Image 1 (cartoon, rainbow, N blue to C red):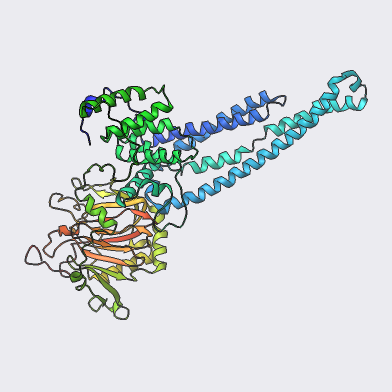
Image 2: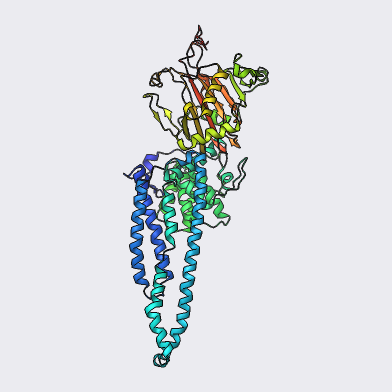
Length: 603
């Protein structure tokens, strides 16, 4: 493509507006609370306007609206206080297990909304019926007031209506069927996902798009492997995806999603988004990707449908001058717009050197399982060196890789044990962390998207039984091991390539534990995954796929205590499904006689 001095050109070109809300001085829960307070107020105000418009023909409605306004202010205040006192809700998207609760929350809110609508309709029907009856009566009475009142019954009923029946109607109007719905909303809102959750889920779709080489249309039309339910993205959804990428200066994905939004709109799909906005973002993003001819073509389309656009005309002239300077051909015309595909532009490089190898393995490509290596893999019964608990029922062991040696144990967990572990873990799930190599402190990281919980053997006999089984199978002591970690991966959940052991440049990583380095990893798969979610080892090209109830085991350290750098591994993004795992990190202390030191570094 064409190269330019972007810093110099930014002063000459105008970009579409960015959403800068994330740059506010308000952060975290304060920002979320402020946003929710405003949102609650908007909902209540709209309800007030709706009720007032429906009842405006009724005498006394103005007084009713003022009374309702006071109630709205009080409810808004209560909702604001509820939001301020609510716990932090961010990062819901990092756990499918916790997201399932939102499905039932939404169903309950829908039922509550329907009940409110029925109550509102019933009330309005009663009011309209009364108004229609009085409309006919007042037409007759106003045509000849004295004649009408000459009849004593009419005179009596007028007194009765104005003294009693209009007061009853006023009481009916003042009844507020929305109280139940609004109360339900305020209770559940504290558990709603926030802006960071929406952003995280959108980024997850883009991550899946990159890892599994799926074009935007595959997502938009729900064409994913292993899916059981249909899910479509509208023009507005695609536009929002592209706008989020644009706000993050991710022009690569902004182009892909804005192009998809434009494609669906061109087929006639209805949308709230206008075509000029899509072309505005798309043309500028294409320009940032270095494709001047296409930027010119898209900007011309924008000018054609919106000649008075505040940026398009100036940008078009600038693009054309820039292209003229680079090509020395001011009359060059672009042909028909070529569709933008996944490989039209090169994805920018990032911080991960083995990105391409890692993602290829996640797709099942580049696995270095040769026939010679396969011939060295066997299956056997493992009795834990004649462990009494395994003599009568030995474990089924399969070789997954020869060097480094990785084995899989079948029937390592029963379905009942899996459900119990998930039940214990779910209330404790929090955003998964990584250990800072410099400080040894646990912290969240963007390259690990999941939620985890730690279970002690004292929490339940099942956990204690699983810990003992791990010790029996591996022959290693779990007395100095870390607690059983249970993890559930969310939308596009992953853990990019990492080492389980601490390297020489991070000597304090496990200092606080006082149990030495992580000598081995024992990883349970507690669910099947419809698509994606493999455990891959980029260094030697292995991919291990989740199978419910099985476990894989490998050593992170040689017998000498030196780290085996080949064991750098990753949890691939979950494309379709919910991935549950639990793992036990076994430490050096206590293994002195169970796994004696070797004499050389590579032992």
